[in-house]
Length: 260
Image 1 (tube, rainbow, N blue to C red):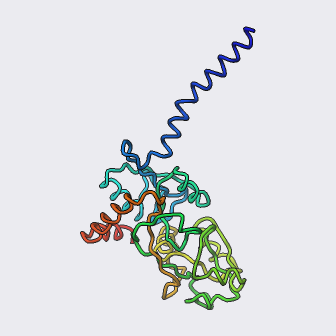
Image 2 (spheres, rainbow, N blue to C red):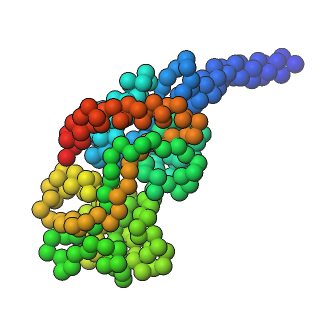
């Protein structure tokens, strides 16, 4: 009997110990837009997306981080950086574990499930080829029967129908710098599809800026926005107002200039 009472007390103690944690967890995942705790949990991803999100320093930086941080703080929110893998971002946003992430509408599998702010900056996808290559590419049709290096998990609207039909083959890698290394040293690859600003940033930091050429025109251009849950409309409206204000004041241009 004493033995049974002992185990009963232990089980009860475990439940009592877990209760504060469970309450904290339940409240924490849904408190980002609560009046009593204004925290904005912003995804910057494990590897970042330089120069839009830079994570390999003491503190986060980058175009999107700087803009979202500036606006969030002016709206009275404490911004917290979260590093969520790309394949988990959408569901974790819907579940309330994070409050926002950088995204173009066109890059989202089910955009109707989410709310998007006005564009913070335009992203322009281009083809990069090694200097000295026998051929350069300026449109998707130029790459028919070719193989392009792409980023794992990314959607390329201008190329999707060619990928699905097999007219153009894609080879996925997980980081931007690896895209250029594969393209430079692999015989089976013809071009890499990368945002122009991202490509220039990577090549500069890797000391490869003299070894690649970008296509003269972009194959696509999309607004890079903050993606939110649909119930965050009041936050999105205030964000858009402040975004327009810093665009007009020149503060946004000053941030962009830091990363060009």
